[in-house]
Image 1 (cartoon, helix red, strand yellow):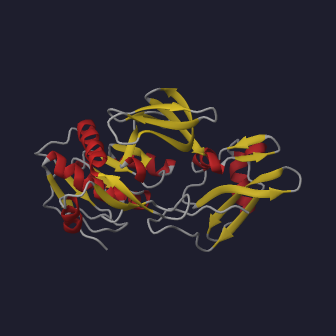
Image 2: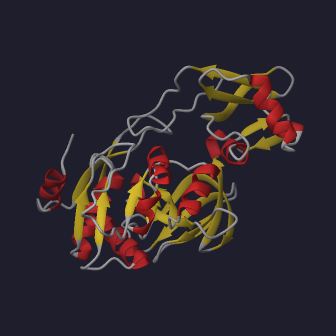
Image 3: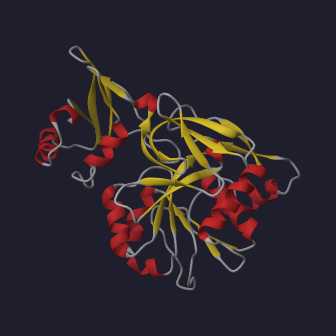
Length: 315
């Protein structure tokens, strides 16, 4: 495992690029080269948004092996502020001597420990959630505990996030970071427009509802869309609805073969769960039958990437 010192040495080695790896959640992980100028532009935008200055304090409970960890170091370098490394663990522990943290990045698996330690809310000015979408229950728990949180949208190729959804709206609307705007193609796939970055324009494979050049609602991956007898289903969008009624259940929705419809919606669950009970809960919650899973498949343990993202399969 690399260290912060290793990364700082690479940052100052005179080369224009940093080596990084994609997460592997949508395909085989691959090594890519990120322009340091892009990473610096991203860090400046984040620091501007969160008002990170020389007297600010950042903390890092994530691995430096991934872009989220690397970018926290770059933000600290750009602002000239303090960066405090924390143990990389799902159980976040903030020492008593640390009185304030202006920005703390976390992944969903770390959120529960923050909810259980409400005393940290008074220390942490902003939480930056990345890696995967948190559940509605986790979002509610953070808000009830007094945390100010933001969900990030981005990828390794964009050097971290290009948009954030905050804790104040009833819908999860992503708003562009400074210097970023958006458009869509004919398939409603998001196009990132970033004049200050080397890539300038980046076509994603994410289906969105574009509200304005600066705002969108994320619906899911284009390659995950299920065409079931002409009905187009967005698994990630449905997952967000289902999780409101299935707290604590780890699952994802995917496509399965159907003799009648060509493809059908399948729920894949971690652990031994009663499929009849899960479906009855969703029915009682008012989910229309056309949006209900046609099959439920249970696994003792779902496969994950090295950064703990669930690897989706089709059946």
